[in-house]
Amino acid sequence: MRFKQAILILIGFSLLSFGLPKNLEKKVNKEITDTFEVENFDLISVIIPSEIEKTLPSRFGEDNLFKIESNKKFIAYAYVSQAPSKTALFDYLVFLDSELVVIKTKVLIYREEYGGEIGSRRWLKQFMGKNQNDDLKYGENIIAISGATISVRSFTDAMNNFLKSLKILHSKNIL
Image (cartoon, rainbow, N blue to C red):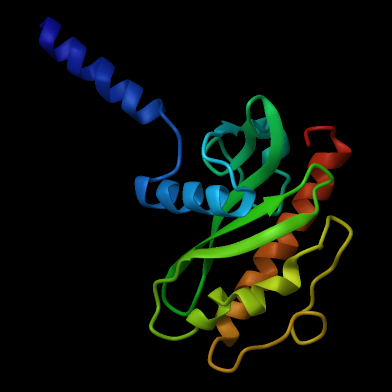
């Protein structure tokens, strides 16, 4: 009987544990190390009250918005999420400074044969400097990529929703 209780407790704790999947965690850690030139850092989950999270255009949870600190000093915020491509989802990362301005965006995992060009640094650079007051528009202030139309529109929509969410979180003094 005690063995069954121990197993149930272990299963319960594993279901309660949050965090990035290992394959994403490795990629995020590498980006943090490369971008901010730090070896030792902490990823601290930013907890958003559920009643506020329900009102946000983007999905937030204990597993995708983090404060990055090194030696107890703030470095940046990191947001990890997914957006749809033609038939699958792709994972992406956004770094923000303390003023909630985009420092960097990165496509972490792209699962399609076509459209992977959205992962190019050159295309992603156009999101640098964007903040909660920006409105991104495909074909106007976000350039199109031939052969990646669905992914470009999807990423643009995802970033717009994220920036709108930041505005709400900032107005509620959460970020």
